[in-house]
Length: 68
Image (tube, rainbow, N blue to C red; front, side, top):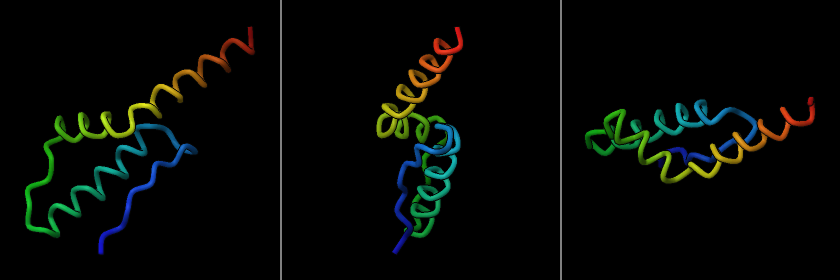
């Protein structure tokens, strides 16, 4: 059984993507299937987890305004 990806809000969106891509590629290869291309995997990850990118960006904007 392959490891299940869980989004970690404690690390940046890009690091979560890297972790997801690694696990997703491994799962596909273990099933003798071709993994997603880089472009397709970015699209799929954004569809699944893009809401976290928005939250991360909004959180950064809130912190910037606190310092003004």
